[in-house]
Amino acid sequence: MSGKCSHHKSKLRKALRKCCACLLVFSFIILLVILLVWAILQPKKPTFLLQDATIFALNVSATNVISTTLQITVLSRNPNSQIGVYYDKLDAFATYHSQQITYYTSIPPVYQDHKDLNIWSPFIYGNDVPVAPFNGLALAQDQSNGAIKLTVKLEGLVKWKVGSFVSGRYHLHVSCPAYIPLGNSEANGIVIGTGIKYQLSQSCSVSV
Image (cartoon, rainbow, N blue to C red; front, side):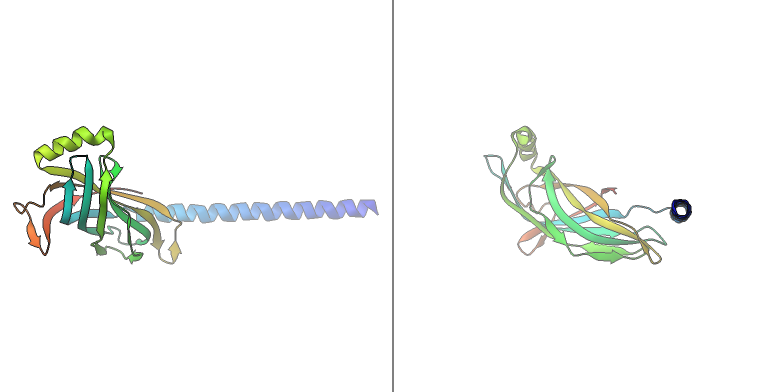
């Protein structure tokens, strides 16, 4: 009786080993196909351009406090001819020397088709934000120069779409430098209602 049981267990172990081997081979083939398709398609990161910024308020107080209200126009282009991009989550905000000075403004999720272009115009703002002491010298210099160097950032999650295949989520980081006059000067801008619009046409760095 014990001999039959041992024989049965041996067969079961062999069957399990064969199943595991088949699963490993199948997984390897699937992974290889995905890698080959990825290499053939040569996916490229989306490109971003900070087209303009309309300044409704950009003031620096004597106590090194910044108040900012602006509307930005950002262009995003998908350079891929066979890969779509899902923007699942995207937030816009501004920083000054790596210090965040506005709240996050969410951009609605969107799918960007092959070679497609999207334009977003979110408002970003922050009221009476204290500047870190280590940024005080740079801020004083910017005040004397009459312009401030901000960095408009977009951060979120993207997915890639190839045919019916959709990848997992990847973190997207976009950074756009913007050199903007203080005091809403009309010298280099266009009056838009209560704001001044500045054409920037500034390319942004993108990492995924």
